[in-house]
Length: 75
Image: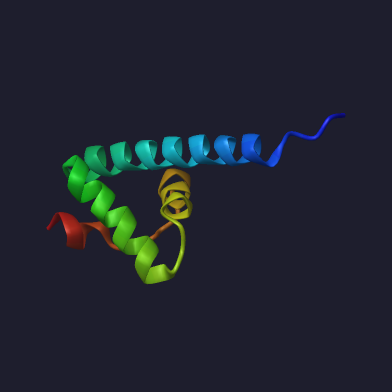
């Protein structure tokens, strides 16, 4: 089997990250009445506080893991 080039894998990772962030933002907007900017802000701030990537926090939101209290942001 031929191994994909590192650049191809990097692009695939970027596409996955973008998709996850978009899905998580939509979920936050739907469930908590946030607008797009606030949903991204929540993901970004949570990632920064936890020293993680935004896409990792987004994956947690999608999986239903408790990442932080979104109600504080929406409230």
